[in-house]
Length: 101
Length: 450
Image 1 (cartoon, one colour):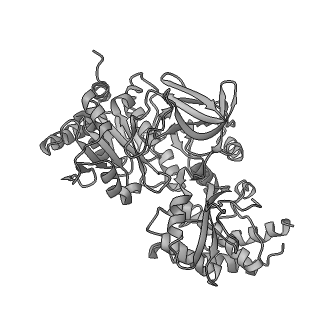
Image 2 (cartoon, rainbow over the protein chains, first blue to last red; image 1 turned 180 degrees about the vertical axis):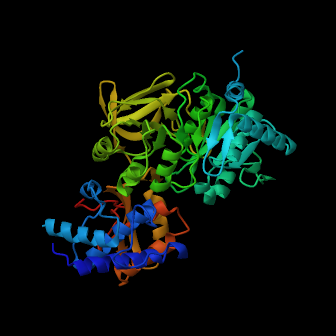
Image 3 (cartoon, rainbow over the protein chains, first blue to last red; image 1 turned 90 degrees about the vertical axis):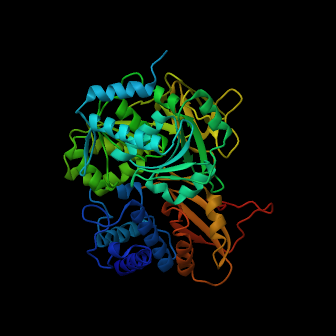
């Protein structure tokens, strides 16, 4: 499948908006590329992280009609986590979309 | 007569003296101070009229007061219903199902009477034996929690034989069998227990490093998050000797990553249920999901591919469900296993239960609620494999109108939030126009193509 980086970002931003409606004021995420997601200095806890990733998958599905799996063993075993920031996640989504026939 | 285990513990605490029993950023508590706290709590309980056999709901956690109150209640011969902060929203239900007569709040020190009478046939067994009791709740299939009643004297007996003195992090929950097991093991060997304020990987790693922790009892999901966050590389974890994990399936890929990230740490799998207690286990190797189970007081067998256990530390029974034991005393765990000689490997569960990072989700409970949401015609809840949490909760929805999927998704999430624990809220939604029930009105929890 082909996924434009802008579409990937749009899907992440939509997922962030959805998530913010359920997060307390002090834990709101900003919809920007340099927003940290998970790891040092990032605001999300584990369940938030999983929810966000799966919500991004849903929004990509809404946009493209195709299923893209962002949480996988290969994502987990990367030296640098694809979940560290919005920008890294968008890059990762575009990259694995290319590999998905 | 054999000395009571509580007296054995008291003697060990006295002997340990100024050695640190409990520590974190806010507190450091020696065994002498712990003994004094138990004494203070004992006097308070006596003044409040708590007699042997009184059913007490204890609001507590791994804090000096939570542990002091627990040990004092055991010494008093009470029947204790444990409630940790993550279960506070279920407190009223636990009190009702457990017939709690008194609530002891270890956080603010209050002791208040409750409306129930403590009448229960299983409690009478404990009262007759003059043993203290512990009640642990686990999720039940219909959404109501099941209370397991344990003879606390028997649970304590396991720790009479001295074990190893290792600095341990109290990562697991105060009101779960594995958390309780960690606490009792640590106290019985007068070790230092480190009490976390948060379970975020960064905070846990900082504690591991600052307090030179030797054992981290945790779950496969947390290990995934630990690796993912990279927190382990930012702190000095050279003191850590053992990581134990249980409560859900461990993937081979995660174990292999651990071998790279933690080459000098032993990875040990644990196994326990609220019904049977925690079993002694031994992993075949650091990177093996095979383990040897059993030891004194434990027997297991395989029946039709399923795991059954008989143990001395098994519960007396459920408060609110029929006995799950076979006629010869085995508990049917519902876990599917593969057996190779004396080694066992867990393959998953033989049921619809979804295990999200070690927490159980029963589809029927969530389906019942989602059906009440406007725009939902039919719903089926099931689990899907997930690389981080082991499993994710998926909702397959047949909408009743033209509501947009994104809008219906939000409506369902908003409806569920506050009604059920966060981990039970579906993380993924699939929409279909096909029927989700069989012609016998049973929910189809998986599509034909899955």
